[in-house]
Length: 218
Image 1 (cartoon, rainbow, N blue to C red):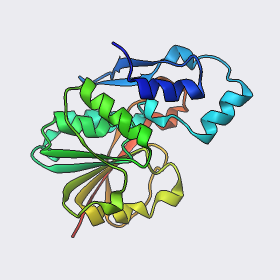
Image 2: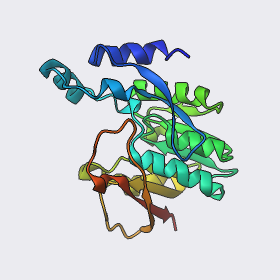
Image 3: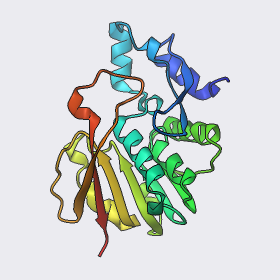
Image 4: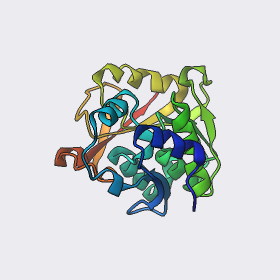
């Protein structure tokens, strides 16, 4: 199986020997095009480090919160079955793909990065589902039953988005391993999930504990 040319080319411009490979996600029936972990197990040159920091290929990883949310939706399909769902900051598209597999009526993958949306499209095809695509969350109509969010709150400057999510959806599910308790009056922590980023970045153990929050518009 050959990786999508545009994504492979973009990755090669950052890390010349990096390759995208189809990887099964543990605890799911999903696969994603992810960066080959063997290519990450080496020292990066200063120029490679500069390029990665300037334009990180986050769409080539399955981050812990996305994997945890995908597993949760597979186990609890009632959250998405028959509903219109938007996957905010979709990255690889793992949460949205899981929602589609769990019976969502419609799933829109939303991300500012065109490469992320290309990754979502490639990963949707890999899993045999159909997604819609959007680059502008605020251009979307208030028509969604559920907004899915994973690994977006790594920067506290993004916390105001918690209000914005409920401007486009009746409910929101937010999975995050970076911000432990954002103490928003509309959001309730449901439970703690366990997952790890793939390929393994040897992140601190604390980042394998993913908090799942729920909010509902009044």
